Image (cartoon, rainbow, N blue to C red; front, side, top):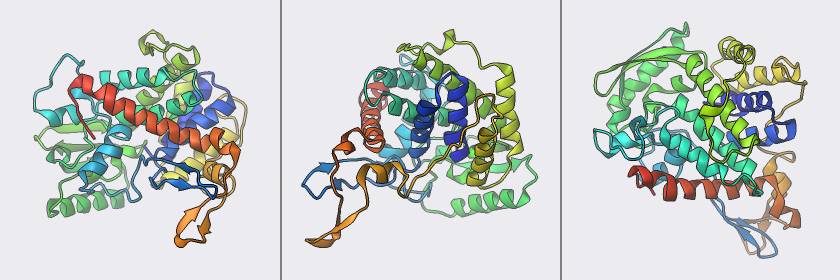
Length: 361
């Protein structure tokens, strides 16, 4: 998904589930900020204090990134949660270790991920953890069938689309040709470019085993929205077991409004689709009170600048950046997000994935 999915769709689903604006705003900000947290350099303060952070995305969305460690640190836990071929932890999928890594929608692994996050419900980072989880959970639908490592399992052929945007399809086909002569094997859904992340597209392709795969992104995104709704309902009801199956589906009239937005907003640029979602939210079209929702990633109103202030070059070295320390930093949204990011990744790679025989860095 892109920003229209991870930010505004998440916000709308949370509000429909009964979350208030303040909490839904933070939840959705965290869901999108997973794609924005690209820097892992520690933060140094002028008083000598330091803060360690990790990245959950790469600066350049180059799916040919051949760095296996980078793949394990960012792509696998945050964008392509392994699906164990949709099987429970006691079952071993055919096809070797790589089959365990392929992303599957709403898999048992994904449910365990949600339960792992739910245990933080009463902690200061609980809401931030849930926002990160909503990003990962949504991507199990959008990124299904692909793995977050460089491997031939991500190869696609004969890609076609029902969308009338022939320029996009031509670019994708040219992209696949370039992949075929590349010395680096594909990562994630790179060869398919951004087709999996466009909510209005129906498309098909042939996978590396010759299977013909049909995808309807609108249907996939609606399924994601419905399941996210159930997960957020569990969160609001303090159900740490995350028993989504006991929750009702999203009311059909609300789901229809989301479907309308997914189908109508056909801009190639996710930022443009995001603007249209924001406009609908500001007009109250989703059934809750109108609100001027924003996502500010840089500048004085951004979480990171509110927390850290502006960077100052160190007198000891022009290459060393420091910040003026403020006691409010410890309880800032930006710090809580990064605390949650670190906790999430550790729990996934230490506790959740090993249950399925999956060992990643």
